Length: 150
Length: 379
Image (tube, rainbow over all chains, first blue to last red; front, side, top):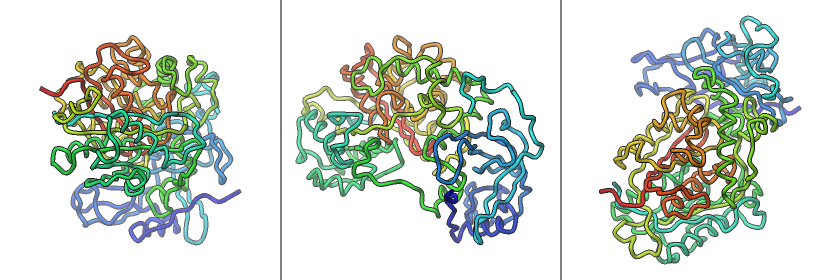
C-alpha cells in the first residue's frame, strides 16, 4: 500500500512538524489579542500582530464533523473517516480517527478525542486522534439501514 | 445599479461527454457561440477574463487584442467575480466590451492538467495527509455538523437532488433527466457518507461565455440586454477545515449581501434563483446565507416545494450541477441559466422573471461571487 501524501514543511510551519516529531501538538497564540490560531504562520490572522508565541496544546479535542470516504485512495482501505477535530484551545484541524470503528454508530459528533502520534518517516509524524472514552458500539440514533450506512 | 449589461451569452454547442475537443477549444466553442449571439467577432472585444487557463493563452487562441485582462481564479465562482470586475473596468473606461470564457474537459480530460495540491501548501500539509480524495471528501465534511446543530434530516438532504431533477426533467440539454425519489438517492452508492452518488454533482464536459458592455451601448446588439443590477465577491479559505463556521459560509454572506445591496432589492423582488450546487447541501447553505430562509429552515423550505417547478422561488431551474452539467467550475452555467431566464428563453422557463440572483461558490466554501440580473436597468 502506498504511503500517505506527506506534508512538506515551510519555514513558517516547521515548528509544528518539529513538535509533532517529539509528540507535542504546538499551537500559536497572539500576545496582543490572545487569539489562538491554526494553521501556523508568524503573525496573528485576527489582528495582524507579529507578537505571537508557541505553546504546547493539550492534545484534547472533540469530533466536530466528518465524512466516511468510500472513494479509492492508494494509501487507504476504504471506507475511512476524514474528520474535523475541534481542539480544546479553539482551532479546528483535519485528521483521522484511529482505534475506533469507521462507522456512523461509533463516530459520534462531539465525542472527546485525544491526539496520538503516527510516525511516517524521520521528518514527519502526523497528529491523529482516538476516542478518549471508547464509544459504545451498537445502534445509535443515526443512520437507518435504508440510508445506506457504510 | 451598475450601468453594464450582458449582450451575449452561450454555452458550448454540445454539453456532456465531448472527447473530441480539448479544454482550450471548449473555451473557444463557447466564445464563438457568444459572439454569434451578440452579433460581433473578436475585433469587437477589447477586454477578456477567464479562469482555468491563463487569460494570455485563451485570448491569443481567440485572436483577441485586449486592453484589459483579468485572470482571477478562485474556483467555480470565478466567472461571477469576472462579471463584477468587468463592470468596474467598463465603468472606469478601461475597455468597452468584455468577453468572459469557461471551458473544461471535466469528464474526458482532454488537454487538462491535474490539480494535486503542492505538498508545501496548507492543503498539502494539513489536509492531504488525512486521505482526502477530491471535492466529494472535502466539500462534504461540514454537513454532519449542520445536521446535528439544525436538525436537517437525511431525507431533506436527498430532497435537494429530487427537486432539482424535476427541473432537469424539463430540460433537453440536462445530462440526467429521469425523475428520482428519495429512495433512489438512498439506494445510490455511498461516495462519502452521508453523501450518496445522487447528492454529488455530475462530472461532464462543456463551456460557456458571456459578453458585457455598457448599458447605453447595449441597444447596438441584437438581443435584449440583460442588465446587471448588483455584484458581490469574497474569499474565505483555501482548505475546508478552516472554514469559519461549519454551518454557514461567510463568503456567501459577504458576496450575496453586497450584490443585493448594490442592486437595491429585497428578497421578495427575486423571481428566480441560482445557487451553485456542487453537492446537495449547497442550496441549503445558500438559501440561509442569502437570507431567503432563517437558519436551519432551508431543508424544510425545499421539501415544501418552494424551489421546485411551480414553487414561489424557482431555484436551479436548469437542473443544477446535480443534474444539468458540472464540468468542475460550474459557475458559468449558473450564470447562463440566469441570463436565459431573464431573456425568456430557458428550457424550463419561469413566467415573468424580472430579477434573477445567481450565487457562486469557489473551491470548497473557499470563495463566492454573486450577480443580480434584471430585464430593466435600475431606476
